[in-house]
Length: 250
Length: 309
Image (tube, rainbow over the protein chains, first blue to last red):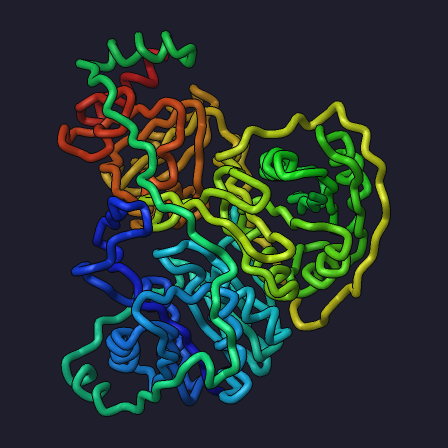
């Protein structure tokens, strides 16, 4: 079985995003960029499935600027076999629906048994691409995965849902989106980082797949969230209780 | 604008998140509801009494019992011929379903809106709540998920909508529900609790967490939450997690105990009305947003507090 893993280059999760003064977006210049953490979990899961003999080949895909090559190389260093960059201009942000259409076209060519991807990117927090891809491929989806097992022609996915956990059984090919506790991604070793440099990486364009990436949504403005200001500090539990009584909860 | 709101339920009763979605939909236009499930006539009757509702569509089929999106999305797509917007609570069930519907309608979804600004203009948070984007859709139809804490709940009674039975293609045959492990608790659910007591990594271990946090929560009739650090450390299960990657809550009163206040946690609770922080580190970021802060050793302060209220 082949596993397709889409990955996105986003602002590093340790960096606090700053809204641009003109309200046009978030300032990404001179900011550390990394692989979206949920996608890193997806790459790790794919590599583990390959190590367990459940998969033979891992293909990683990124739809983004030329720098997304770095993100793909990271995935290759973690254990993916080859990469496809669907390159767009630096300033272009491709929406989840267009991403899903490109991925669908790639899946038509590659015929993966499983598509593993993050449940959302930590940039636009949309949480859509996996579900949309599943719809376009007319295949089942296991979102917010906490564990994934492949048995014969099915994927058993334990999902993180509001009340706890839910298990579903999906007929392959299937789409699985990762949640945080699925695994802890490995660090690529130096020899593997070196080896990744010679793994195949092909560059394509959205037009190669016949997908129109013009946006359906316009961002009119981006603002800072309203700030909460610090309140009072109380000296001891006694004073805290007095305040709670004033609030009517003690 | 005609809107169709997805009713979140457990085949027994309407979940609160639905009521917030109804409020959002009512500010966009007329509101009909969709109840899909198995043996859910009682749920549809409950839904029919929700304020603002014109009509309740009832799809009763074993294929819809567990809200499998493979089965429900085609049903919704068929119904959307008569509607301009599909409005869905941003619960895990809603987030699982809505994008599947959007893609089949060839529409870009607007995820987790926090306000309705115009017919096709909304605000939503991006970058874990570090920025708010005002966005306008150019699609003919809208698919919108609604953050429950950002909208008042519509009144659950007073309405008297008609119930109309509908049907869809049924079982797509590609997925099967196996089992659910849903935590049973006497406590209020986090997303609807009026008071929440949350603990962080400082609680040391699962037993200490339970010994310190639970008695206070019991006394206040509060829901119990936790930071991601506490969940990752195994003190409590994942469904306790409050934060950008967990649950978004906005109770009347939120107790942050031994929680430093990482951005990712703040994103999940900063809309709480009153935030109370207890932490021994006076420089902890949580104090920058807390209404009432107590710099103290939580292992002494929390039991003392529990004793005095």
